[in-house]
Every structure is written in structure tokens, then in C-alpha cells.
Length: 185
Ligand code: 5GP
Image (tube, rainbow, N blue to C red; front, side, top):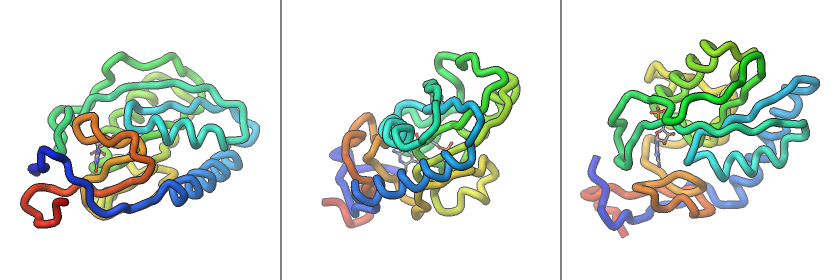
């Protein structure tokens, strides 16, 4: 998949307001589901950082925060390497972990993270993603417990999601046009 080096933005899929509203709904569901339980919210860096800070502020429970970094795309639009934790896993033995990730595509990254957490003796693992790409269920990877929005099979940026470290600070989620698709602006 070749992306125009200028990284031209296309259609806005979700505005700042739409994201904020859906994030509150997810937080409310998570608050209900974890009543009376301890909860560690674990952010998969860097893409989930805005999602993490927004959602945790609406989860009405005492939560602990942890951060992990998993290598996958290496600045391209296709997975280049097997997922791996860049700095290992925090000590979460016996805890309920909610992994927060920006997007599920093949589900391989989250499958890897969930298995690693289970092997490290967590009490439970659930997964919350902002975006799920169409067809992710058939790609054999992880199925999230909480999904913000389902999207078509397009490369998207914004609200934490990057292309070569650009566009993370867009407040909305937008499509990044590929060169040759005739829609670059
Ligand atoms: P998976 O392992 O589910 O195939 O991929 C998950 C990771 O790939 C995400 O955490 C994200 O870093 C990256 N990724 C997958 N699709 C997109 C996309 O459309 N846009 C961006 N910016 N990253 C993506």
C-alpha cells in the first residue's frame, strides 16, 4: 500500500463531538461492568493516548493506569514485524486489566497482548478499542469486548492514530488517501 508522501487527508469519519459522545457511552458501560472490582486500564502506546485520557476521565471507578508499547507497523501502512512489547510488561499479576487500543485490524497485536497478560497471571483481560476495521472478525485475531466505531477497510489517522508520526493530534478521525486512488487532495 503506497501512501502519498505528503499524506493527504480525505473524508472525516468521526468528528471530535461524535468521538466524545461515544467515549462517554463506552466509559459508562465499563463503569457498570466493573462495579465493585479493581481495574487497571492499560494503554497501548502511542495510538491510544487520547482515547485513554478521555475514557478514563469518564470511568466512575478508582482505576490504576499502565502503559505498554507494542511494535507493529514501524511507520508504514502494513504490519512489518511480529508484535512484541518494547519495554516488557508492568506487574499486573492478579489484577483485572482493561487493554485500551486505538484500532483493531488483523487483531494480532491485541491477541499477542492478551495472551502475554494471561501468561503473567492477570485475573481477567478485556479489550476496548476506539475503532474496529471491517472484517476484523474473519482475520483470526482478537475480538474486542468494547468497540467505539466500526469502520471500512481504510487507513485512518487522527485522535492518536498516525502515519509516520504525523496526524496524531487531529481531533477527528479521517481517512488518509493512498497515492493512485485519484482522491488525494
Ligand atoms: P492489528 O494487529 O490489529 O493488525 O493492528 C493494530 C495496530 O496497527 C494498531 O494499533 C495501529 O497501530 C496499526 N493500525 C492498523 N490499522 C491502522 C490504520 O488504519 N491507521 C493507523 N494509523 N494505524 C493502524
